[in-house]
Image (cartoon, rainbow over all chains, first blue to last red; front, top):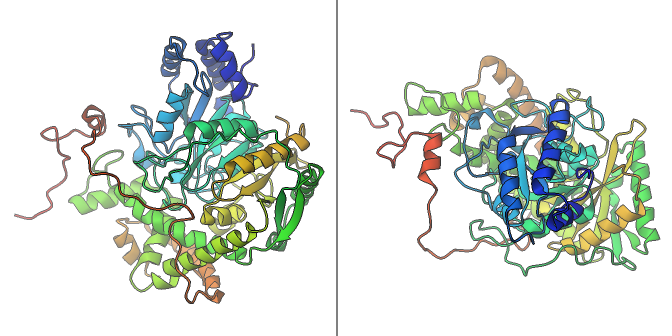
Length: 478
Length: 91
């Protein structure tokens, strides 16, 4: 039986029944990776022997009830997994062995998942194309001349290429949703605080959130069931009642109110993206939803706000990489020079650029004009969304204004930042959002639409996303 | 912008070529921030943690520490408890 074209839900059920052993699943997956990954390059680290060993251990388990039992899952390389190398796509962490499991890794293991390996990413999750990885580029499985998006490009590509069934990414300003859109898979960024960040290498702590990639909306709901929940080791994780995120999937959305953001129309969209957006609105209406216009007046300020706040937080978070305790160490004549040499050699250009922006905007004399100002505008953006959500249940907008671009085609950092123009506002407000494939452009490249839910309303968001997926079924080529 | 000053603060020491490249980008990016000046933020509280996220204090209890054997895989520990760095205080 060919396992790799199946959903997580199907694979777990097959593995649980014993119809196919987890070891056989692992072997199929390893063959697929050996066959395809030399071209796609989704993985940074993968130890086939260790995968087989983990599969054999799962096969001897008496309790096969885990929601992801036997499901091959890849993890973005910024999440710690005990006794494996974790680099966050950076030279400065080359050779770093994780001494512990991130909470999400622990939770996936408890759910019976077969964790396969670590996927490529933009260095420290700073980027939108995975071209900032210190190691190599990842290629879009739909067309290898194009980027897979980023920063979780490896995780999105591995799912699209059927190298794994599902994966985890992290999203600070769009790093799950943008690659999901570019590769034609489903990617969910949960509400800030829904999933523990313990063991995730921090980029911008007030924005970072871990979430799943899957082939279907339901698979991302199942993944969220496995990884969500309060964790005392992450002081921003939120205490909420345990929920089943699949509970509303398949229930009709008649009468649900969906908002279309007026200000999105001020941005230029690729023709096919615009058409696909209209198709999505029609699909929602066909399913009985009421679509109305809402306003997010401060939308256009989201990008500059983000590029002040995220680098500011990053400049503080990345101070820990000094060569003392792990990773690269370049000796200097004294401790200070050792720090400098290690960091100068270990960090890539984009990371240095952002550290320097953050150092500048937080420095004496500039703090009020930049960081404090941005944090205030962030409040206004969040207020805009709150007002919109007093009228509607969800929002719909394109994930990106264009489909994937060619490797090497964007060299200007500001132009690269523009890719996240529709994902960043939602991140700043901490809202949950999902990107689902809704069509392809004339080159055959996938188009993704973003649905945004109220804070902690992932259940309803997934219900609406599932309906759109069904209405547009067959179009996304999965 | 005095790039050298911020390099020093960030413990970086860029090559001349890298300085040239980054300094132009930084000027463009910082200019791009200017647009925020048109937003009136009088009497607006800064937002640091988004809705629902609030900090809590955990109980001050003894917890298991990281596995020293795995820490040793990254750096040799001095007296099995300490990281080794170059001397900081002078003679």
